[in-house]
Structure formats: C-alpha cells, structure tokens
Length: 299
Image (cartoon, one colour):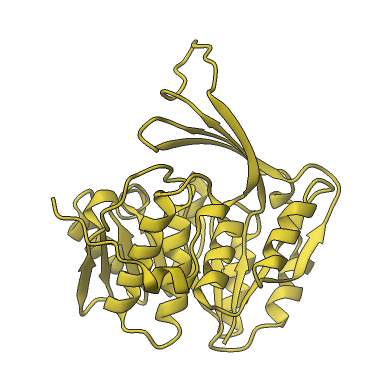
C-alpha cells in the first residue's frame, strides 16, 4: 500500500525574534535560517521517516532543486514532481522566544498544478491506497473526486483554513487530521468533544484526529474515543509539530498499529520535533521515536 502526498513544496525563511512583529513596528531579527519546508514536504518526510511507502506530487520552480534532493535523500519517490517556470512556494516564518511561530505564505508554483498532473499521479494508485492532501495547493476538488473514483482513501489536513474549503466535497474524506482552530472552523463548535461530534455529524464516514496543543490529541470514529497527552520536552520551535504528527499517525494507522499506539508514537514524534530548531530537519525517524525515553506530560 502506498501513500500519495499531493502537497506543497516551500523554501522557508525562518527569523528568530523576541516577539512577533506588530502593525507599524520595525524590528531586527536575531537570526535567519533558509531551509526546505511546506506542509506537503514536511508531511512526506514524516511519512518516509516513519516507514511509509510515500510518493510526493507537486510543482517546484527553478529554485527548487534542494527541495527535490531532500525528499529523494529521505526515501520519498519524487517521480510526480514537475519543474515549472516561476518561483517555488516560500514562507516567511517568525519564531519567538517561547518557540511559537507566525507564518506568511506565498504559494508560488504550488498553485501551478494541472489536471494532467493530478491524473498522472492518481493513475499510479490502486484501490485501498491513500491520498494525503493539505490546503496549500490548487486542484483540491479534482484530487478529492479523482481519488474517490479510484477507490483511493483520502486523508485531509485542512490547513490553512480558507473560505473555499466549505465548497469542496469534504464528504469524500476518510480521515481528517486537524488542530483545534481548524476543527472549530469546520464544525462551528469550540469544545473538543463538540468539535468531534460536529465533524462526525457533517462527515459521518470520516475518522477525526483532533490535536489540542498542550492538551494532547483526541480520536473519534463514531464509536470509540481515544486520547493521548503530549510528552514532556523543552519547546524550541513548533513549526513542524503538526506535520510530524500527521505523517507518523497516518503511517502507523495504515500499517496495522492500533489507534492508541498510533497516537502514542505520533505524539512522541511531534514532541521530539518541537524540541529542535527548524521544520524538516527536526522530524525524527521511527527508530528515534521508539528509542525515546521522554515521558508523558503531567500538568
């Protein structure tokens, strides 16, 4: 079974700051790192490092050679990545003293996908394979409908939340992986269990995996609720935490692990990621996760 990740590929400009810049404020950054990123790329790296057979599809510009190389070096199949004219997607990321981040995203070639790109990548999938998508590329409706027609199961990380998401055929999604802000936007509720109930009411076929920051994660499939806390680590940079969780959970859940074990391993992986600087470079391997001695957080 393969996982096809049709996702964004970005060059990240990461600025270390005392606090997020305010309207009208000019502020000097303490440092700048230029690195590979994008939710799609980060999630493909997490999938591969967790042990999945992962194929990445997307577009890069003439400046995207490092993005392609990193994926290939990490064991990701890149045959469905196309080089096009124009700059690759990029992000301006502020990381403050507490490790929190604020991100300004420019889509670039992530919005250059064609129906031919989508058809070519889906043609390599079989019924029972998985498609993972986020909301940083164009073509989501064609992707969702095309995957469903082929019997390919769909996992969606609806980030960033935009008004057009509501018009997509989200009833085709088999698994939502989302945080509390995204969950509230799609469900119209605020409290975690109300978010889970609201999403299940709207999308009754879907599993819901709701991450809750320092309050851990909850899973709801309409019959069973599972929960898991975060792990005790120093928070350095939260940039790739959600992407790491997504990649590890999906790999484990689709490869015979129980849901509680998938939640546990994904929680360890994301905790390791936030304890390191950077996005792609902070994502651990499955071996590192299994050997970790970190303990669940005790409030």
